[in-house]
Image (cartoon, rainbow, N blue to C red):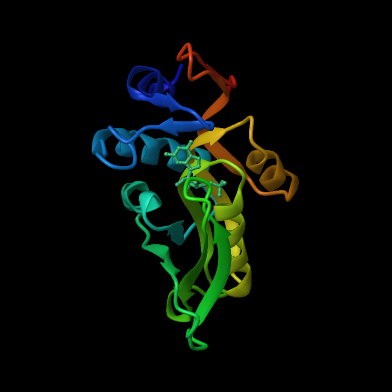
Length: 194
Ligand code: 5GP
């Protein structure tokens, strides 16, 4: 097991409805030393790709993205969730359905902060059905930038997002891929990675 898989086994909680709760170290209380190790590992996996910007989505992607960005020495832009329909032409907009809240949000990024010269690494905490990622990819495409890669902390391999995104041809690197988890027994099985 790698460092993140070990942490999930030790401190993660499996909830009904295929939800893995990792709020003691990843997305509520945040273990910055763990994020630092994640940043180091993403740098190793995406080395040489010319990444000059990191894109994530609020809220829980932001903490991880900031620490990862320190390793790449590049700025972070986060897509903001917006209820307003009254958005002027200065924004890229995508529609994202939340896996955890089952609501639809528009996410927006200012045109000032993303453009054709950007070689983007997308970072997020979870990958489930891939809606959040597809929204972020759409925003980079609208900006005519390049998605150089996608880095995820925890992928739930039994949901469809990973396969959809890999089939689109993106380099998707997830530090822990959960193959199955059982809320009754607490058992978690990870996909083996090299
Ligand atoms: P997707 O758009 O891939 O279906 O879901 C991704 C988003 O849903 C992530 O940004 C994350 O915030 C949330 N999410 C999905 N599955 C889980 C889960 O099992 N646990 C937690 N804590 N968040 C999840």
